[in-house]
Image: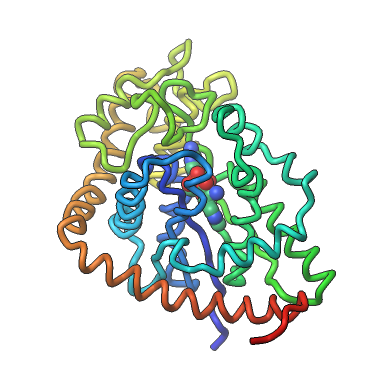
Length: 331
Ligand code: TYM
């Protein structure tokens, strides 16, 4: 039998996980578990590029890991761990930093956005963030990386770095492919549908947290901004309605055409309620499973410790190759 291909992806514990994280990434991760060998760490090292309260970061990191499981990532099938538990991520990042140009990093949209938002803390880590992300992926020789649209530029630079390294030092890294789902790869804010739904949105009505209560979810959808006119059709001049339709499609698996037909002739009020109920029902089970896990932390601890041990072995295998290629003396 052919060896399974490897999937790698992760999330930063920099805030509560949102419906954007779920539809853009997590929901796709779940479906890939049977066909691929999957690794889904919590990217805690990336999170400190922005100032964090240490105790909050620790709690949130565990929360994210529990939400992965609550959403349907199966610890029997996938490796679930913390990035910081595998020191090879940082080690490979250094080597890759020496093979990455300042110019290519300064073109990254996320760096430009984050340095505007955190103008008082434009640290070197924020700048070299994509190199750490490249190290994450290349360390495990990942074949496929399922992400939302906003991470595609980071995937491109990862491929560039890997190709450059392979060219210079000889074949070392697998060149990873990005994977985005059909719907949901760019979920927008419910309040300002021109902007991406984000866990750092100061307006909680703009995003749905995976742990929001059923009633809060319905309330937020009822308040969602729609557009002028009354037609329920996706179009560039209807960003609010388009976003709600694409959320509905991503959750139900229906096509846009099917969804538009279903809501044909309905008013915005009924439409928003229907989308809200669909999302609230889907997330109800997630919240219940999360609450169960929160009471069973020993079980969760066992998962991330065992996964990290396996991850370290894979990581060390790559690092041995890398150290030799770049000319470090063998121990
Ligand atoms: P992060 O933590 O911002 O987001 C995690 C995943 O969720 C997706 N996502 C969205 N998808 C659709 N609509 C949205 N509104 C939305 N918001 C977030 C993201 O595209 C992502 O897939 N740098 C990464 C974390 C990371 C990583 C990696 C990912 C670090 N190393 C290696 C893959 C491979 C990040 O900040 O994602």
